[in-house]
Image 1 (cartoon, rainbow, N blue to C red):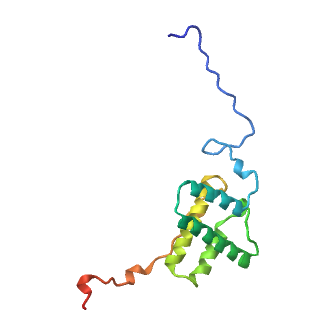
Image 2: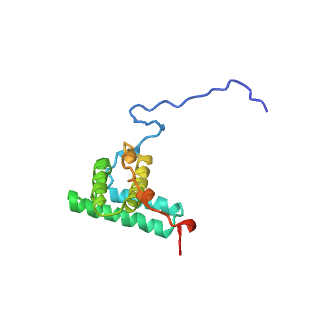
Amino acid sequence: MALKGKVECKRPKKKVGTRKYASGRFNTNSIREIGMSELFDKFMVVKKSEGLARKTMADYVTHFDWFCNWLEEHKGVRDLLHNEITSEPFIDYIRFMIDKLMNSTINIRIRTVRAFLRWCYNEDYLTKPFTKSLNLLSSHLSKLKLLLPMNYNA
């Protein structure tokens, strides 16, 4: 069936005064101040919907609690607002763990923290993707000698 007559295409008028980002959508997450604990709760809901194992979910909670305890003990606050989250406290936390834990253990904790911070950035709660500044520590596995059957003398 053919259309008869003149077809007009009206474009919607651009709203003046709204702040848009590269994705073309308005960042409503930057308006309301949200605590890091509330963000973590939202993060855990998303991770649960992804079907992660219970052990993984428990590790996320445990590692976040350890970070919050350290934050309270060394910085005097238990929670940060989303616009106060920077790489500084996380790097300080890594420095603190270096004296007390093995690199492989620290790397596990860094991965869980980076996953949380990456999610915060992807959801527009953070303005800078500083997860790249949270590097994994080198593992000294190359110094270990593996016990291979040809090296084993009974």
